[in-house]
Length: 344
Image (tube, rainbow, N blue to C red; front, top):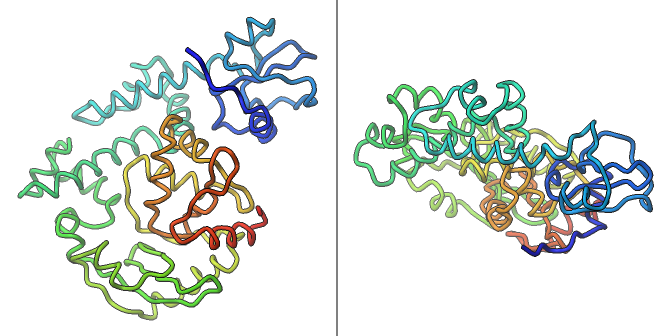
């Protein structure tokens, strides 16, 4: 099967920063040592003229290179297969699979596989399973008459198991979720920023909506049954910090959030929050960081579904060709935010 040619400039950049997101996508061969490595290999980097890039270990071996004993590049493919198999097992299981059993079924020691799974997906196996079940509850609650029935349909052994884990992820009780946020209070304000008017809304848990050029009417669409209340002293301090994030997006203020999405979307949002100010990532890199390198389009969709502009910095996402890409609140704002961070 034909492969797209390797972008050697992008590959060298990934190798220079030891980017784990590129592990498994190509290997790096060094002519002076005769070995090939994965992009994240911790060994000292050779000079650019001594490096070539190959699609995989087989291609590098065919060119006369041998595998690095330090980073073990040939294990990357095995690791990805194991993670994919574990994800399939979790998704097919009616009950949560203990870590020891899950690791054994894919051929790894528990602690090693725990680290491997989190590195590949952004979450632990247990968190992935909780997220999957919570998403299923949210979907079932829209069609089930009974909250309890929806919880059982989603794979929980008893309602108590949902309240112990899944309810925390949804950020509200299951009946409130089913009723469009009934029983939840959302406080909002409109703040002036140098980039325009900014809607800031939060529950008691944290920010649930940050958006340019929106007003309280948009909250009615997102939380149709919630109690939507203007302002308040408790929101004023948080809103000031949000404005600070807009004016100085090079600072990470670690603001509290109360947002929900699918497990993959939340992994993409976390990958966005992990990008240092002044840097960008392609949608392909975000997909890989979220545990599914092929889901490039879905990574773009996750950026578009981001509820909290700037705080989850989807403005740091760009196309693989280096072009800036789109932005829900206008490309000019995206460029302004990136310029303030020093990446443009």
